[in-house]
Image 1 (cartoon, rainbow, N blue to C red):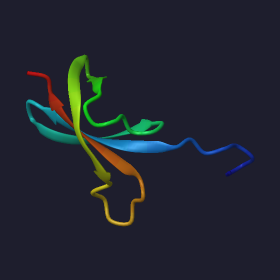
Image 2: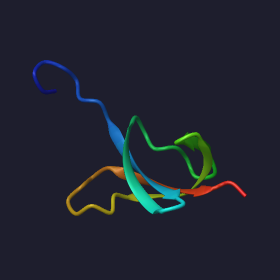
Image 3: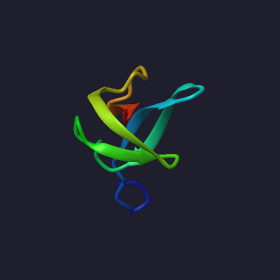
Image 4: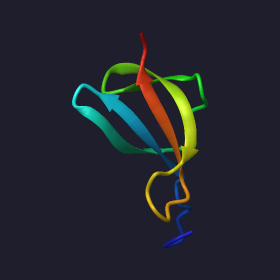
Length: 68
């Protein structure tokens, strides 16, 4: 708790785009493997949930691929 306000839990999303992958931060728990999510008006599927790729970061990261 900082400044009397509870901190919101966040996770990372490793998102496939036509220009390569992007790392994005989102509020809440990461989606489960196999779940479909929307990012930038595109539907993607979670293929893996793993530790953050950032050194010292304890958050989880969802890896997303486009639906085929």
